[in-house]
Image (cartoon, rainbow, N blue to C red; front, top):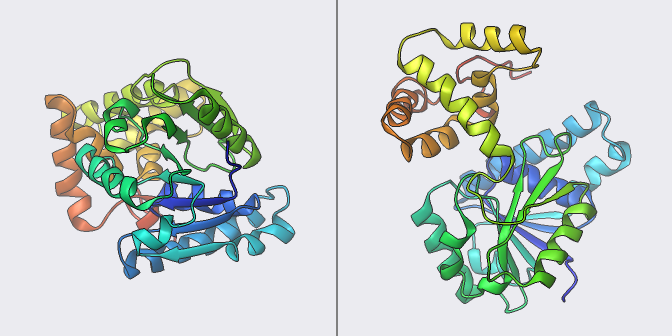
Length: 286
């Protein structure tokens, strides 16, 4: 099995940028791909912000390593260039099945035969994507939690076609970038984390759609009643309202109504969550 040295991350949104930065922080050379120069400029700002966050939050090794990590990340909007020398590609593009499928068809033709493909999909089954990869034996899911440096789980989930040696290689890689590998025995939409989290967030969305209470009251009830540090709408803002919209739009009637609410009240107004400074709540840019 080829050792992983060069990693490409497709998608530089909230989580994609964290995956890329954490991988570089752990000593790997990283290529971060996104669709255009504007997206890459935003990514560079995210990377710089993450370097500062690692120092501020006293992540082990950040005093010397946070800035050095930036030098191990190269950005590009050319997909062929991005994957030309990749040992591992971690896909973190929007949660849309058709978009992911078409992306893997392109990767199949562009990436070296040795390259392992991993999806960070939050809710989709890897078997829905495997036939489009051209290498089902070298494809699996590798799912990260938001704020990867602190909430450092990496859920590893293959399909029946995944080569066990590839699975073991990705588990080893996850550990090398400071994650706690969570080995999932068989396919489950949502893995472990989102199988627990998504129903919780969906329940909050339904309370809002039905006019039962406003986000602040729902969050306050959850925090006081359980001792949790955040309520569901605070979590939505961290995850990003575009991701919440994509997931909700594929759900039942209530979830689709919540998706419509998100689009009308927030997304169409440029309020996408913490990343833009405003979502359900407002956040200081300082």
